[in-house]
Amino acid sequence: MKLALLASDSHVARAAADALRKSHDFVPVRDADVVVALGGDGFLLHCLHEAMRIRGPKPMFGMNRGTVGFLMNEFRQQRLEERVAAAKTFVLHPLQMTATTTAGDIVTHPAINEVSLLRETRQAAKIGIAIDGKTRMEELICDGVLVATPAGSTAYNLSANGPILPLESDLLALTPISPFRPRRWRGALLPGASKVEFEVREARKRPVSAVADQMEVRDVAHVSVAMDRSISLTLLFDPEYALDDRISLEQFAS
Image 1 (spheres, rainbow, N blue to C red):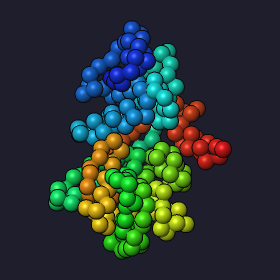
Image 2: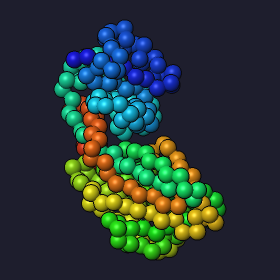
Image 3: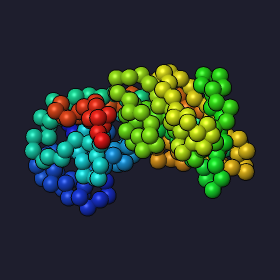
Image 4: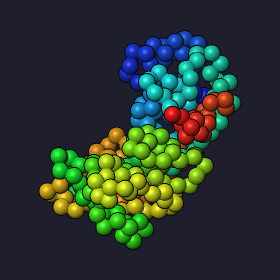
C-alpha cells in the first residue's frame, strides 16, 4: 500500500510529519492509495475539499495533531501501514450549495459538514424556506439557519442545538440559529434526497451571507442546498474508535 503524507502548518503537525518520514516511505498524493493527514478537523476538511478538485479522490486517514480532532484518529508513529490496512471505511457525500447574490452572481460550492446562512449586520435575517419546491416556512426571523449532513451534525449544528444524526441515517438536519419568530421552532429532520431552498427577504436591507464549510458568499438573495451523490469521499478510522462510535457517544454526553 502506497501512502502520501499531508500536514497542517502547525508546529505540532510538522514535527509529527518529520517523525513519520524517518520511519515510513511516502509517495506524492497522485501516486498514493491512501492519504495520511496530520492536523485537526479543519485541516482534514481542507484536504477533502482539495481532493474533490481532482478525479477519484483518495481515501484519507487522519491523525489528530490539532485541537478537537473529532474526525481524526489518535496519532501514533508505529505500525502506520497496518493501521491503515485494518481501518474501517466511511463514505460520505457532500452537500452542493448554489448561492445567488443580490447582484445576480451565482456561486456553487460543496460542503462536507454544513451550509449555513448568517446575518451580516445587527438586524435579524428574514428567510423563507422551501423543501422540494414547496414553501414550508414563509418567514423565519433569526440570526441564521443551516443544513447539516450526518458527518457534520456534531459540529456547528450541535452548537446551535440541532440534532445529532447517526451516520447510517439518510437524513439532513435543518436547524435555526437563534430564532426569534417563530420562537419555538427547533428545526426539522429531512430525507437525504431533499432539496432545500432559502429565499432571503429584504436582502439589501437585511444582508445575509452563505457559508459552505469554510467558503463564504456575502449578500445572498437565494440559496439552494442538496446532497451531491455523484461525489463520494472515503474516510478511514481505527476499528476500535470509529466515527459512528464517536457520534453515538456524543448523543449521550452531558
